[in-house]
Length: 85
Image 1 (cartoon, rainbow, N blue to C red):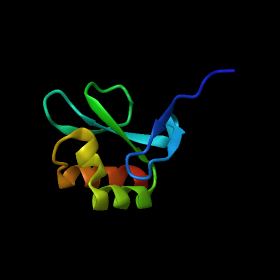
Image 2: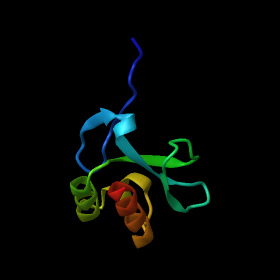
Image 3: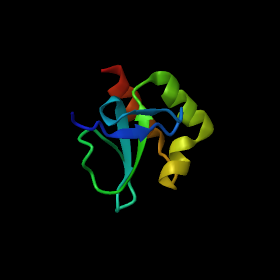
Image 4: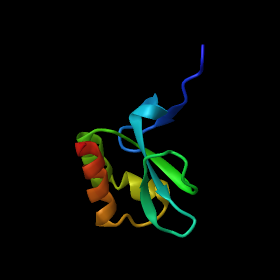
């Protein structure tokens, strides 16, 4: 049996399989991006693929804390796009 990599959602603090989460990355260049491949370089934070989790993360500023930088509004817009698909 293969081990399933688990990660914690920064908003809900739930442990979930990595595949069910969305990775947001602060790249070495200092930009914040939504990482759909899960392979981008940089500091990553995981968010549940759920609108409620996103709203919670915005309210609590979980992503800002996890990535140690300001999160531009475009990043939240991009996450909403990905969740809407």
